[in-house]
Length: 469
Ligand code: SF4
Image (cartoon, rainbow, N blue to C red; front, side, top):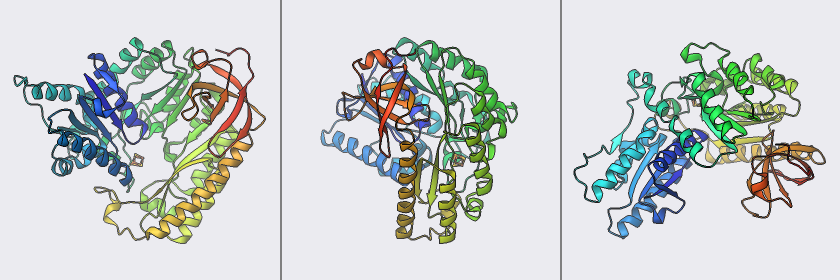
């Protein structure tokens, strides 16, 4: 059977989709890249931004319309992820042709339910009718305490990977959910409170990935650096996990996303100087540089505390690359608040950032506030920060010209199949040409001399005759 999966949103969603794909593949089905030939279509959705929701709704509308035009009952079309959790009932009403809707913590049930529905459509009515809408009850503490369901989904991926090709770079989910309560964010409602996986399970998964050829691991968690606090491992559990992973023979690089400034301890900044594998790159969401707005957002840190973390990071690794998330136009944001954001943006020297214009998300605390910053003002602030970002990124990249960078070779360049793409430890994309082909270099660490830079990437040449690994 042919399965098409479309994913919107963050790396957590990407990881969930990998699991869904692995489960289908284990049952002998093919994952295809063209939805027109698929027997089952699954859209894994995101609810964090309005735009991501609209894109997913557009995609669903498109595949439903095509099925309607054919007057067919196949393919089976299902939705999972955060929007399925948050707006499942509404989706059912507005797009009644959708066959199933499974919330963010039910993604592991997607293959089973989709396949049962497919069998029923083909006439196998002996199959019991599977439920169309399954979500967690956000009011039920019990649901959140039962971690077996969603953590179960992280176990089978390795079997698939070991049987299949290796991944140079792989994600590992170290936790689910979030215990913070940022006023604008729907995640605690869609993914539940924080639930960390046991460290031995994470280490086992990492060891298997490394054995199968993985060189770089990115640890995923909504508040990755609060890892383990919910299961009684104490405040240093995340650093402890990094230290254990650092000892894995064959693992070359570790990244993680996303940390919360409130849990960025001196032990964690110290780990950048101490651990061989911990890459000189961190995504540290600021959201706003105004203490007044941070308080309204329920982000329990101040701009000066944020700058202190940045300075500790730069002390540990002077060349560290720091990216961030910013929301402009939060309710009540005045010009002077935005000026503070600009100031912290510059002082932090961010060389990469995701800048969003605030839009209220139904079900969040801030959705109750008047969305009182005019669109034109949000647009202007967004553009100002993008200009500043372009300037800072360019400065950062230009500093790398004429230096040698260690890059981990990942793939062909998307827009130029003759060029090869790898990343520096600081997460910069580097494009280069080589007499060696991709198959010879993929997964290898090589030295590349950087010869030019743009805002978004670097170009170099591969001068190291032998890859180092
Ligand atoms: S820390 Fe805040 S923004 Fe991040 S997932 Fe949790 S509630 Fe959302």
